[in-house]
Structure formats: C-alpha cells, structure tokens
Length: 199
Image (cartoon, rainbow, N blue to C red):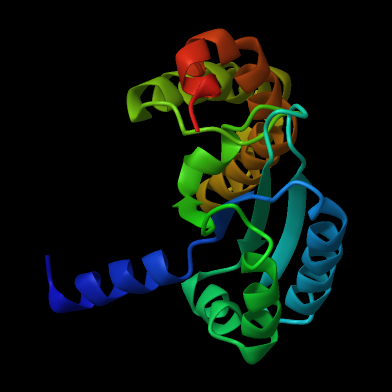
C-alpha cells in the first residue's frame, strides 16, 4: 500500500460518523438535577459543528440507577472539539458529582450503530460475525428486490450513476427500516439474556 493510500485511509477513519455511549449511575434522589444537567449538556452540544443528535435512555427499572446517553458526531475531529470544550467541562464536573461512580464511555462506528434494541438501554454489541450475518440477511433481499422491480430501468443508467442510486437507496432502507426490524427479530440470538443483564 502506498503512502497516499495510507493517508486516504487515515482520513476516512477520522471522518467516519461516531456514536458515543456514556453510562452513568446516578445517586438516589439526584435524578431530577442529573436530567436537568443532561438537557443543558445536549443544548450546548447542539451548537457545535458536526453534532448529529442525542438520545437518553432512562433506568430500565427502579432497582437500576443507570442512565445511558447516546450521542453522535460527524467525525472524530468534531467529536474531539466538543469533548475538549469548556462548555462541556463545566457541566461534566457538576454531573460527575451526582454519580455513584465515574462515567463509563464507549465510542462505536460503522455497522455497530445499527445494533441497538429499540426501547431498551444500549447493550454490548454482538460479535462481529453475528452482525455481519444479520446485515447480509437484510442486504441481500433488499438489493435483489430493487433489481427485480427496477432492473430494466437501472440497466439503462450508466454504471456509476446506477451503483450510486442503488447503494443510496439500500443504505437508507438498511438504516431506517430493515436493521431496526432485523435487530428486534434476531435480538434473542444477538443479545443473549446473560449479555443483556450484564452491566
């Protein structure tokens, strides 16, 4: 591999959208203040370039004080800009004082972000081979159906434009329709109970 190819690969990795999962176990009685600070944190993050959204998952039961905050940034550069900002540091210090233990943080990217259980706290990602298999089970029929329905039309479009259209449609279907359903259908296999119960 040439030096140019190495540089290109490194740039692609830096600019890959990133999902950050932060786990915070809040002291009993401090939930209201914690959620207020979390809302302020989200408002401040939203003003930063590259911010793509935040979702808060509240404790799954009264006996479990753990919150999960999932937020996304466009790339490593914009995420770093937010995480090193004074705006975040000020609220982070106040937030940490409300916790049973320090926050736990995990950064994920790629197809891992497809594999979350709707309506539940995010869990440890499944093994790569399981994610690959389920992704293929969604991808194969989606691509096949596109060519069955629109094959004649697509055949008349130049190759580059054809692949651009097909991949764009398939990625939208995968992200917003197919993978949420596939993850839910295969959840007993992707997320065994022992995995889902572990913290």
